[in-house]
Amino acid sequence: MITKNKETTKMIVCLSDFHIPFHDEAAVFAAIRWINDCKPKAIYILGDLLDAYSLSRFEKDPRERSIAEEAEIAKDILAYIKRACKKVTLIDGNHEERILRYTSKYAPELMGIVKTIPELLDLDKLGIKHVPYGQVHVLNELVLKHGTRIATGAGQSVRKEMGIEGASVCMGHSHRLAVVYHSNRNHTIVGVENGHLSDQGKQKYLKASDGVADWQQGFSSWDKNSQGWYPILHRIYKGKVIS
Image (cartoon, rainbow, N blue to C red; front, side, top):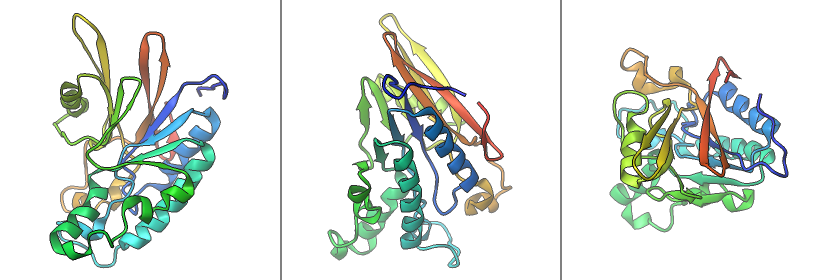
């Protein structure tokens, strides 16, 4: 296990793709325990905290939870994360964007009345910063984002994002764990695909196929020294952080 001095650590942790209510509770709390033990400086949630399942364009099971129920679960989980680390930022993913997109398409008259993500999740009350979908957070030349590009194979999606940003990138969205590097005459940049904290067995669209996906549970931590940022991937297996 990595240990860090609370006063001097520059380590940050990135979590992503919980897809509440299809999250894996054991995986989520394994990550939170790791955070509590290692005392990072900040936590960044890289999108798809919520699934917004009821607003999906795909065929839906009416027995599943509503947006309001998803939000209540999410607030509880965010409170646990906030207790483990004082500085937390939530970056929206495409699943959070479903709420705005659905309202805009089917009930534009309610724009401005329907709750925003910060309102829905009580982010101000929790003291959590918010980055809307489509925007990125740049931390000392490291781009933190949900991501929009998907390619076959671990590492290929973040290569696309690195090409767009021209910088080191940590992204969610792909549900894969990968670290890739790119060097040119001037510098070397690094990209991470951040894994996921969902339960594949609960994902409806996977059940509609063969129930198998090229996904890996986990998260990343990043530390910085005079040479720049360097990431470590932490795989979760059967509810335990194993690397």
